[in-house]
Length: 132
Image (cartoon, one colour):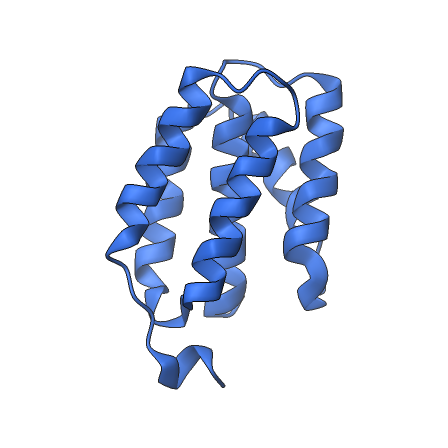
C-alpha cells in the first residue's frame, strides 16, 4: 500500500476502535461500519475493500480499542506527510459517524474521538506530498 492508502487503513482501524470501545459490535453496527467506511474512504478507487479487511483482522485478533488506537496513530504519524487538512476533517467525520451509527454515543466512544482530535491537531502534512 502507498502512504495515502496507509492513512485510510489507519482511520478504518480508528473507526473500528470507536465501534468496539464498548466491548462488542452489534450486527447493525457492523453493517453501518461497512457502509460508512465504504462511503467515506473507498471513494479513492483502491483495489481492496478497506472496511472488510479491517473488520476481519480486528475482529479475529480480538484487540482492545486502546491497542488498535495506538497502532493506527503510529501509522498516521509514519505517513503524516500525506495528511492534508481535508483528510483530517474526513477522518474525524468518519469516527463521529461510526459513533453515531448505533445510538447512544457512549463515553468510551466520545473519549476516543476527543483523544484523536487532540492527537491529530498538531500533525500537519506537507503540501508537496498531498497535493500531488
